[in-house]
Every structure is written in structure tokens, then in C-alpha cells.
Length: 452
Ligand code: PHE
Image (tube, rainbow, N blue to C red; front, top):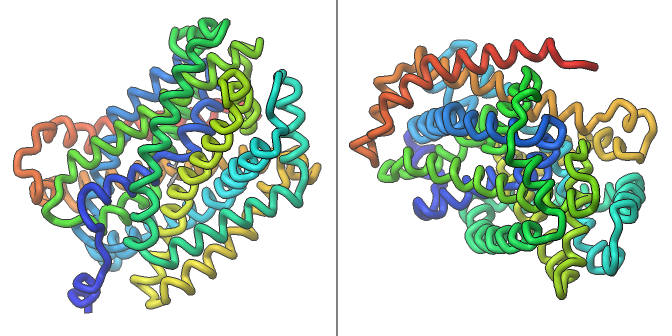
């Protein structure tokens, strides 16, 4: 039965297609919305430094581990653990990943809805002309506290996600990402150049790039690590799932490297837009919450000739980048129900998608829509618990699993298919077996230093 499944299983059209899809999963709101937020909350440049280290030493390691499990087993996360270690509790790491994915999707799609809503805000001219920080804040607050608008766009995003995932890997996911990701990249480079030349940009750059080590503490490290996993789509089996569609001929190491690099590059560029613009608007080093990016981005467009068009374009691409991530979040549980429970793709996407929508109601009402949810900051809370802690726990177990349970030898054999000379091998093995799991464990310990 298994052999049959494998032969009829979908696969990426090519290595490039996989890279685009995986990069599409990685690049999204995490880079452009969440990264600037957590940088602003965690001391600026020192956070950026810890983040880059976490990506290079831990993120890459886990990325390669996930892709390796995925390609070896050609299964969804639950099935993957089950096929390597049958009838053991390891499959629960797969279940944890599925639950985490659904919970992340529930708030992520709300924020993606904000981005979609902002396409129309830009188009309506509400964000045109001389725009002060106060005006921009007010426009966002009015928008995000209006349940009708929020639910409309949240629903739209979920609907599109369900539609694309139900179409399957090749026709749905692949087609979209190939064209749109490069366009997004170019636009972000352009906006960064504009932001860097705004008057007063220097202060913002200093906050963003000149580390103040007195701000380094456990919370900063905990958030940096969590953000690394979130941004790279790690710790919940997304890359196991996407890896399961990779051909045996492809090079997993360079794929992992490419996805890790481009994701980080885009996040760093997004910071180069946000912080100079923040300083330009007279609030350098402002500590923002989950709404920061939406209040700051609009401030740059009036500074560009024809800025309104750029604005419309930017929020459109941000929405697309978000959707290439929402589909990867939904794809994990869908792959499970398709592979293991024999559900049709359509049914799985629809049932899980609708469930996620309901789960997202509190987050959707937490930016002013309903006092109770606003007060307990549901969206931020979900982002922290599922988008940070849960991913770190998942990543820890993935390292232990590949390093000790499945075994390095077998993992290396899988990697060698498509890459006979794996030069970083000793470093990867060291990081996988020792550095990453120990670091994640120590960092998770910092949870108790969190206030409130
Ligand atoms: N990496 C995505 C982003 O940065 C979010 C995501 C997290 C997607 C986990 C899939 C899995 O926007």
C-alpha cells in the first residue's frame, strides 16, 4: 500500500519549484510584520544579532533535519515519525506540529486579512498626502477594531487558502509562488533604499544595527530563537511536508541553505524599511505591538512620487507572501488527513480551514473588536505560545529524533542522495546532536524570566 501511495504522490515540478514554494512558506508576515515588531520590543540591534546567530547555527540545522525526514519518508509529519519509528510516541511530535500549525494559522490569517484590507485602504486614498504618525495610527485602529472589515478579509484569506490547498501541490502552491516572490523582493529592495534616504533615518538605523549589549537578556534570546523558527517555518513539520515532495536527485543542503538565507535577507531588509521610517516619523526606537508594521509602512508611501501605486502594490504582494505561508500552514494537517485517513484533499482543506476560522475569532476581535479579547491580547498571546514556544519544543524533538533516535548515519545517507559531498557535515552533526538541542533547552528555561 505504501509503495502505491508513493508512486501516486505528488511531487514538485523541479528543484527550483521546491525552493520557491519553501521560500514562499518561509517568507511572509513573519519577516515583514513580526520581525520588526519583536526587534522593537527586544532592544533593537542586539536582538538582530542574536537572531542572525540563531538562524545560522540552529535554524539551518533544523531546516536540513526536517527536509531530510520529509524526503526520506515521503510522508506528512505524523506519518513520517510513524514510518521511521512505528508504534512509538514519536508520532506525537507530528500531532503537536499539526495543532501548532492550525493555531498559528488562526491568528496569522487575521493579520494577512489586515494586509488585504490595506490594499483597499491605499486604493481609497485614505493613506495619501501628508500623513502623520497619529493619523496613520488612527486609521489602523479604526480599521482593526471594526469586526465587519476584519472578518471580511480574514474570511477572504481563509477562503483563498482553502481553495489553493484543495487544488494540490503543483497546480496550486507552485504556480503562485514562482512569479510573485521575485516581484516582492524587488519592491522591498526599492522601499529599503527609499527609507534609508529619508531625513532622520540615521537614528532608526542606529537602533536597528548598533547593538546595545546592556539590553541583552533571557527574554531577548527566547524571542530571537522563537522568531527564527517562526520565520523559517520550522518546528511544526512544514519543512517535513514540503521536503516530502522533493526528488531524490535534488540537493537538500543547498536547498536548506538557500531558503534560510533568502528568508533572513528579506527580514533584515524589512527592518531597513521600518526603523528608518519610524525615526523619520519622530519616534525612533518606539516599542510597538503587533500593529506596528501596519502603522509604519503607510508613512513611507507619501514620500515617494506615485506612492499610492507603490502602496497598493506593496500590500498586494504582502498579502500574496502571507498566502504562500498560510497554504503551507494548512498543508500540514491536510497532508495528514489525505495520507493517513484517506480523506480527499478538498474535504480535508475545507473541514480544517473552517475549523481554523472559528478558532481565529478571538484573535480577530483582539485589536479593539471586543474588549475582553483586546485586554488579554489574544493575538500576541497566540503568537507567543504557538509561534514561539511550541515551535521551539517541536524543533528540540526534531533534533533529538534525527540525532539519536533515527540516527545520524541514516540521515546522512538520505542527504547524500543528490549531494555526495556534504562539506558542512561535521558542523551540522555537531549542531544537531549537541549545540541546537542544548541551546534550545537552555533558552526555553528563560520562559520563567518573562514578566506578566
Ligand atoms: N514562516 C512564515 C512567515 O514568516 C510563517 C510560518 C510559520 C509558516 C510556521 C509555516 C509554518 O511568515
